[in-house]
Length: 105
Image (cartoon, rainbow, N blue to C red; front, side, top):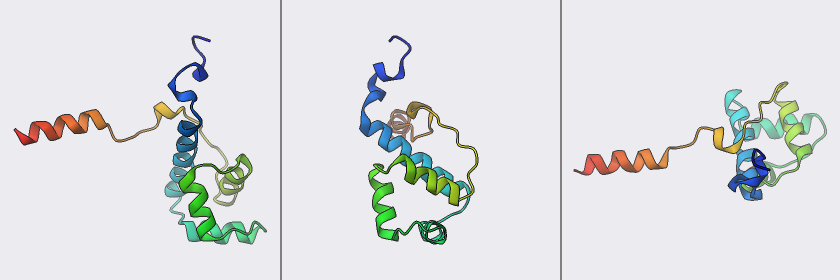
């Protein structure tokens, strides 16, 4: 279990929900696709969702794997790199605090 990702703090479901949400959002941004565009593309293939329902799903990060794959398919994503949550770029909070503190001096 020493090398298992599930044996550490990243095993919490909330962490994975946030990670999945960020991955989908990143793919949309890479392609310049808005939520309105996503709604139209999903509707065009018979997946009827509203902008509100999609915003809610993405905001919560609790959508199904099927929904994720449907979204990736309609936006033209053929390859999807699944990185571990701690490998995704995020705002470096500690560095930020340090820089702010230095500027206050």
